[in-house]
Image (tube, rainbow, N blue to C red; front, side, top):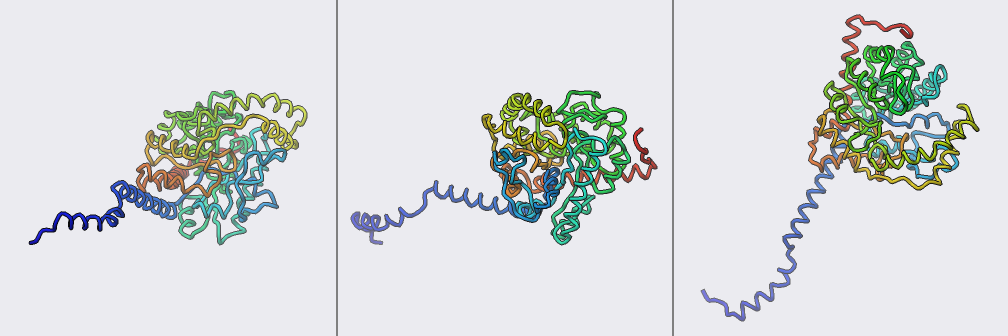
Length: 441
C-alpha cells in the first residue's frame, strides 16, 4: 500500500476540517440527551395527569354560584391582587368549568361555608342555600357534570368523562348543635364536616380561637360518632390541636385534613405537626395539602400576623360603626382598603406546594397525602394563581423521582380509598344496629 506524503495528509485533514468542526461536542451531546429526557418526562406527566383521577378536597367557589350574574361555565380570569380595592370581593377567581378541564381537575369538594359568627337557624339556612346551588349547577348540566356522594360514583362519573362535584361543610356551627341537622346534611350529599372554622363552636375548639372546651365536648364526640355512622368524613382542618387528638380517638373511621399543610415548614397553627401527620396516617387518614401562601411559607405567615395585628384596631372599630351581619360586606370593603395601604406581603413560589407534599410523604408515605387547594378562599403562591397550573405539580413530582403509582395516589386515589373505608365503617355501624341519637344528647 502506498502511503500518502505528509503534505497530502495535511491537505486531506484541512479539507475535512470544516466537517469535523460541525460535529457536536461531548457537552452538546449531553445537553441534547438531557433535553430529550426532559421532553419525555414532560410528555409522561401530561399523559399521567390526563389518565389519573385528580381531586381537590376544598374549593371556595360555591359563593359565586349564588350570584345570578356569574356563570361557572364561563371562563374567568384569575384574581389580581389589589383588584378588590374598595369593592369587597375580587373580580377574578381561580376555578370554573373551562379551567377545570384545561387544568385536568376531574372533581372538587365545593365548600359549604358560613362564617363561624353566624350560628343557629341562619347558619343552617345559608348552608342549605349553598347546597342547593351546587345541586342546581349539576342538575342544569347533566351532560357535563355529576354529583358524587361515594367513591364509586366518582369513578363512574370519571369514566363517563364528567366533571365531578362533591360537597363538604366547613364548620360544625352549621349543624346548629343538632344531630338531626347533621343527618339531613348527609342525606343531601355532604361528605365531610370540618369540625370548626376559625372560631370555636359550642362543642369544639378551633385553631384560630382561645380554647374553651379542652378539645371536643361530650357532644362533640357524639358528632364524630354520628359522622362515622352516616358515612361522612371527619375533617380536622381548622381544629385546635386538642380537638384533633380527641377526634382521632373518638372516630372509628380514618379522618381527613381537607386543606392543611405542614407545620414543620410554616408554623401556622392551621397546619399539622409532624406528630399529627403520622398519627393521622397510622389510622388510615389523609392530609390534603393547602396552597395558601401563609400556610406554605413561614416568612409569609410572620408577615401576615404582623399585618393582622396592625389591622386589629381598625377591624374592631368597624364592628362598632357598622355592626351586624347586614354590614359584613361594608366592613370587608373598608378593611381591604385599609390593608391596601400597608406594605405588600411576600409571596412564595408554587414549588412550596411540592415541598409540603414531599415532607408529608416522607413522614407518612405516599398513600396518606393529597391536594386540598383552598382555591377561591385564600391567596395563592406565584405560579398557582388558578386551576390551570395544576399539571405543574404532577410533573414536579415525577421530576423528584416519584413513581406514577405514587403520583396517582396523591392526585386522587388516596382520598377515594379514604372515602371507601369511611363508607365501609358506616355499613358496619349500621349493621350493628347503632342508630342515630335524636337531636342533641
